[in-house]
Image (cartoon, rainbow, N blue to C red):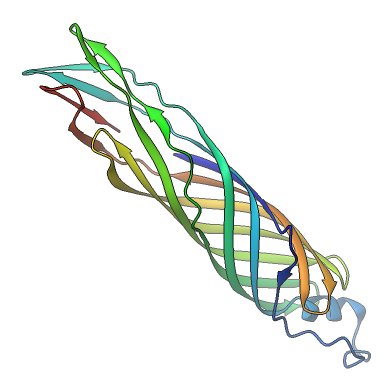
Length: 220
């Protein structure tokens, strides 16, 4: 299961960064000010777009006592995304911060079809899958460009909770994530951001009784 998400703050995100708009750091270099300006705790809220691209490496259909191997078609899923993130950025030196964070995407995706076949004269209807929510724990290196803007990367561990298969089983996909983003301070402790993320989830198996009496399916 592969997911690609693009998220941005349409409303400014709130960050409780430990910034000081006065001249406390006048004795330090501008570059040091840049790093300290983005350090500390933050929360952010974003809206965007996400797409999921599942693939099936194998599938089997059982009719009566006979099992047939075959290929299974599965459709991609595209939908809006909403993400809530909290994290902390630690200033390492004058031009680099290292952050830790967690984010949740609670918005349920669109139900999309998977499977369906005619095997030995028996029609096995397609079922569906739905991505219910995802969450991600990440490490984020940040590089301030100046006092107002910064670029950052993300590497993390992610999980997607999916309802899928003929019995609408609850499946948990786990994998890794990478991302790249840009943020700029709007005013005081408020900033706007845009970022893109790529998620690659592992493999799970699902099986169960299909809709057609006397048949069953299995996917992986």
